[in-house]
Length: 281
Image (tube, rainbow, N blue to C red; front, side, top):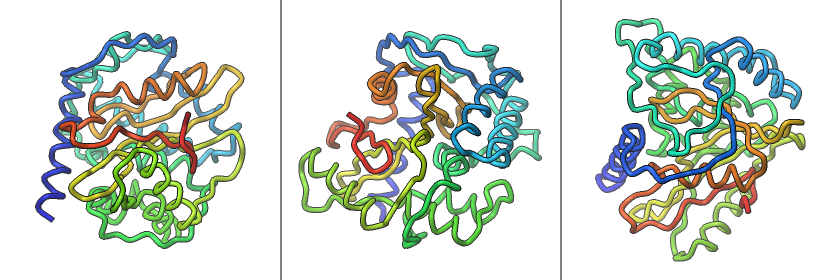
């Protein structure tokens, strides 16, 4: 237990280093992104999501969260309007500070990528509902779901959330290929299904050697559009909501794997990027 909590703390610390810009790798993306801070980009993103089956209620929730986040952080960060090119050095949200006096928005301190992605994918998701709520990697998610009205789920939705995001045991394995097989086996055993052919879930599974497990360290929803692939995410727990266009999956995968907060002390195997139940090539 102590080792698990120590690993969790280490990974959270790595995430904070990412926000501060430490250890960033040089990138050269052709994608364009928005933080959903202006009416035009919000309308564009919600339109793309709704065209793929996401309900208006779900997109309104996303926009409410994004607007609230923008309101309590706008003093510390200059958000671009509309869609703009991704920075060559990667995203740097290190100057963002939340306004602690905004009590009505305290729920945003619990906001993260999993809660955001689930809000958008839940109506097209079915699972065996066999997840457990003792997973330490989900303890803050579970607390938010059980105590905050903004993240409240039905009994069935809660079970789906846990089934979807529970860690995957990789005990007895030692290679990346074996880990990929374990994740795919877990999806099959949990009977996780996402309907439709234009909306998918992208999960980045991180390796925790001491726990012999993989957990979803980052996630977002991918939408097929006429203008390319649109990836919608909460960049990290303290960082903004972000929607980014990519020309193809290879570009998206590069963008994801260049995030420095996905890497630990080198004892772990590489992150694994999954699209629904399959490995993203």
